[in-house]
Amino acid sequence: MDKVNLAGKLAMITDHWSPKIVGELNGQLVKLAKFKGEFIWHHHADEDELFLVLKGRLVIRLRDREVTLDEGEFFIVPRGVEHQPWAPEEVEAMLFEPGTTLNTGNVRDARTIDSPGRI
Amino acid sequence: MDKVNLAGKLAMITDHWSPKIVGELNGQLVKLAKFKGEFIWHHHADEDELFLVLKGRLVIRLRDREVTLDEGEFFIVPRGVEHQPWAPEEVEAMLFEPGTTLNTGNVRDARTIDSPGRI
Image (cartoon, rainbow over all chains, first blue to last red; front, side, top):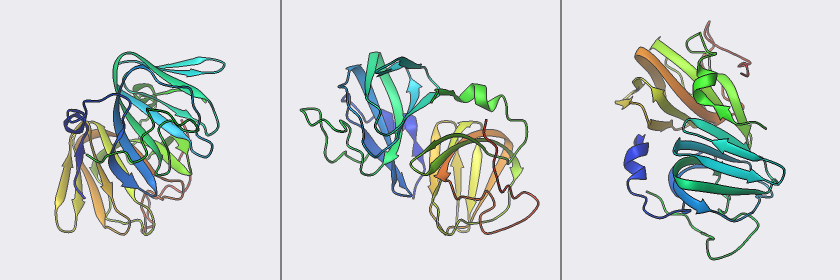
């Protein structure tokens, strides 16, 4: 039950597309992540997912449009909606999502992380 | 299903201690608020509550200690834990909590807001 300094935790993250757990409340997880490049297309059948950009620009491609998030902007991807995060340059982001959420959603591949680390 | 710009939404908030809903996901609400001065001591019996400071300094008084949050820091007040937010100067904050959370928790007084507005 300590406070969390976002910059301090982000400094501990060196890999891309590997969200780390930094908080837990009401069955939901707060995660921090660094993104760079293109992630895979996927969806989460039962979970809405919030992306808040802390640094950089994150594009969330949807099948019918793109949502561009700059620092201080968030977007909630509703459950069931296919999306592909794309970070032209490195992005720092905070995520809110249920504890059950898998980073690659309905897809299982080399980037799937079954048990995100806590920092 | 639009993105949310935190600064833009915060510019719409003129009153203190009156969180506004800016997002909803998985039964949880994302709220933005401005604080100034002392709030009341209260607790939430069944809800954990996250305070993320976006601007200024927020002190969360607990019965046995104080947690001081500066910009880019968050703290999760666990359910059942009495707390009193205190903002010596104006603070801008993001809250993350269940849809059922009442701002004054177990206390009902003039500052209780039964239906927070959406902006």
